[in-house]
Structure formats: C-alpha cells, structure tokens
Length: 105
Image (cartoon, rainbow, N blue to C red; front, side, top):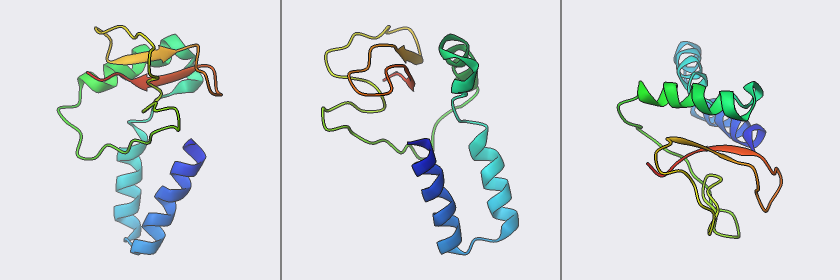
C-alpha cells in the first residue's frame, strides 16, 4: 500500500510540474509524518503518538476503505483502546496480520 501511495505522490508532482524546490520542501515535510513501522509495532506506536501530539490539525487526510468495511486498519467488530491515539492491530483478518494505524480520536 505504501508503495502505491508513494507512486501516486510522485506522479502527482510530475503531472503538476511543481518546481523542484517546492517538491523537495513538501517531501521533507510529508516524510516526517509517516509511521515508522520498521521500529516494531510497540515502539512505532509510541513514536507516532509523540509525533501526533505536536500536530494541531491535519490539512488533508487520505483514507481508503476495504471491502469488509475497514478504514485505516480499523476493522469492524474489533475493540481498540479509547485512550490511545495510535493503535496496534495484531489480528487483522486480511494480510498483513500486524498493522499500525491512527485511532478515531
């Protein structure tokens, strides 16, 4: 999914013919808000919660919905901790089994 999203992201900038400096500035800003899943589930969750605490609001949120009705790795009939801004899903009914996502907060 991330590869598809990043491909779209670069395609958008190529089609829009945005200046290189604007592209570099936006890329640097964009990349700092990605969830760092390579840290492992629990550490990535904590690190991303700290990132979110520094953000006042989002200008744009891009979400998709799975055919089973899940949105942003939040699956129907699953229970997630209400006090967490970032959740870890370890029993996804669809691959990958383990996911990290922002909560509905």
